[in-house]
Length: 126
Image 1 (tube, one colour):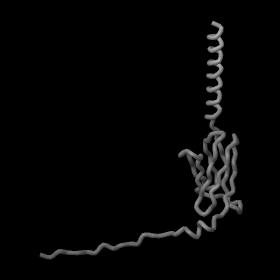
Image 2 (cartoon, rainbow, N blue to C red; image 1 turned 180 degrees about the vertical axis):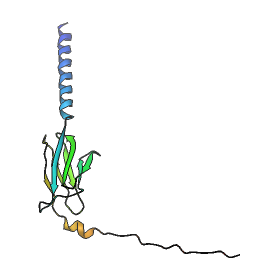
Image 3 (cartoon, rainbow, N blue to C red; image 1 turned 60 degrees about the vertical axis):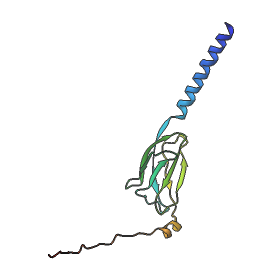
Image 4 (cartoon, one colour; image 1 turned 90 degrees about the horizontal axis):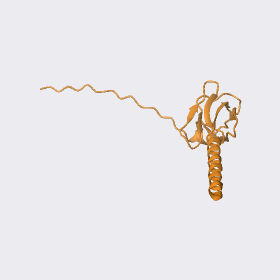
């Protein structure tokens, strides 16, 4: 009987540890912040993604964003013409980021436009 009490207490303690660890790991925080360039100008339309997920958002006209992320997660900031930057959340609620210009990427970017085709008027005469 003594062994079964010990086993019961051990199992109860293990369940408590597992439940506590699981809830700590799954806690999300709401992170807000601003994304700016090297001149401290807001970057409009930068993507903010929780690394390893499909959860993401983009910055507004003031460079601001708001996203829910795991307290131990990582946010990845990307925008065309700027170097990608990853930042660990570490339980913080405010993360401001300065993205640096990526001159090499800009040189490789090509903008194209579609040409306009006019339809010919063809008649079949019998």
